[in-house]
Amino acid sequence: MPDATLPAARPLIGQVIDGKYRLESVIGEGAMGSVWVATHVHLDQRVALKLILPDHASSETAKTRFQAEAKAAASLRSRFVVQIFDSGITPDGMPYLAMELLKGESLEDRVERLGPLGLADTVTLMAQVARGLSSAHRQRIVHRDLKPANVFLSLSEDGEVVAKILD
Image 1: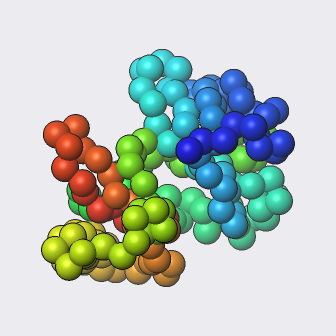
Image 2 (image 1 turned 45 degrees about the horizontal axis):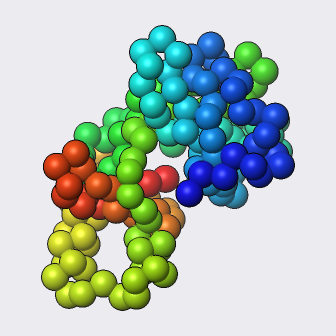
């Protein structure tokens, strides 16, 4: 559940990033950045916007790594990998990444909430993860942090649960 009440998040709510994306609420925070629900102001399209944390934004190494990961992820075309739409660096030096906004929950959250998956669900979801990884590996991209928190169980428009690899 988004938590726009995080103290670090409050000053950013409503801010427009790079003249394109209006920040609405925080989805989550990780080691290097925060992920927001945002709306593209010209297209009225909702996206998930990942912002590098200010601590890392001043590091040229971190910015270079963030941009390289964005470019690699954007090159993937698989329904089992989160789709990247845009990336950039704001005039004040904050790198960002715009990606599809997913509905659902992480595999980690699902298992925490309901307990272990049944055999049929496990086979179905892991086959989807394997297809996403295979797509990445064909392009010589290696996911270095695959874990249940980085597998998102996305609910498609027709109600199907599709595993999507994040990060």
